[in-house]
Image (cartoon, rainbow, N blue to C red; front, side, top):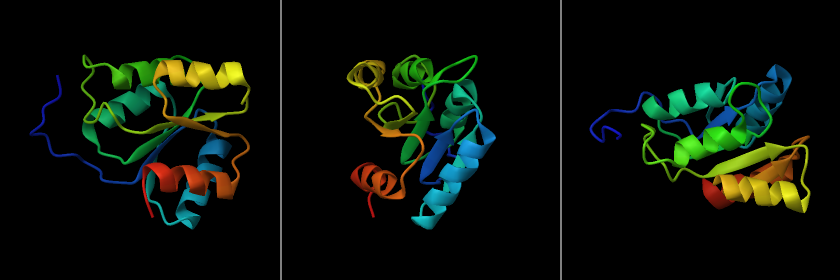
Length: 134
């Protein structure tokens, strides 16, 4: 169970989770262009660990990553057994596949929404405005 008295070590807007360095850099630059502060995690396990100690307004989660993919990471974040600070944090899938089956899989895992890769500034802005504000 989460220690609700813990002080978060970060209060950035968005956590970007992607195993591809170029994708992380592109997402980070787009977020900064839109005026959002962000941190990055290199995989699902690192994301869960960061969410146990840091507070964010939303997560951009790649779905295909080695070791712990975005679906499993989302299930862990949503689980009341995990120690993340906010089990209800908005999670937006980052996926190159945007078919109906893929969208259903994202929703079933507990993700709130999705954006396609490659990232498009206006689409990213609309999703973040919906979940984070501004």
